Amino acid sequence: MLRFLFDESPRVNNEELQHVFDAIRDVEHGLSEGRTNLTVPLEKMRLLELWCAAFVDGVNELEQSTYCARRFAEKVSKPLLEEMTEQEKMDYYRFVYFYKNGLIRVFSLLDKLGYFMNESLGLQTEKMKIKYSFFTVLRNMYQNHLHVKLNDDLFMLKQDHKDVLAKLRKQRNMEIHYINMDMMDDLALSRLVEGQDDDRIRIENAKEHAQNLHAAYEMVCRCLLTVFTYIRK
Image (spheres, helix red, strand yellow):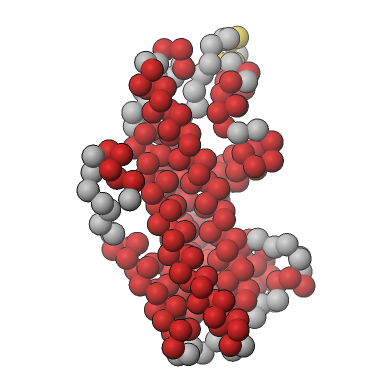
């Protein structure tokens, strides 16, 4: 949808993304037609079906934010805001917009996946913690030996991306609970350069942030594929 910003044709799904959509839609159709081994009441089955459609929309939105963040980051070459042309400043602020949008969606999708797993597999994570996250669900599965193969696969994905997730989680918490990223640029957080005082505004590495967001997007896709393939079987 947003490729037009770069005078590009609409996205053609790559193989991995198409597998994610196919797995989600297979489960959605199974729920719609009552072809499922999930032992959930009918009203919950309808809710799970609606969540499947929401996952497709969520992945689409995350992919677009990730793509736009990367493309606008590529247009930012100056390390200092005062050295940028007006066009480069606009590209930087557009990068910040899509990056913030993407990092919030990463954790939103993971938490929605945690709720979906909890409800569809009867994990009862709410007994451990009333307000739980995707990672609480994994801990519950591990401690109570629930769906061991699924938990092992998801845990490996988490471990493979733990450094990136830690960075994004810190930025997400800063964005939601404290101050946002572009305010951070305006503060003195970027004013010390190798121990040297510098009162100019130094921009964080946009390309590195965009790469981290893309890695997290890939992790989300693999988690979704793992869960929905498991449920489909």
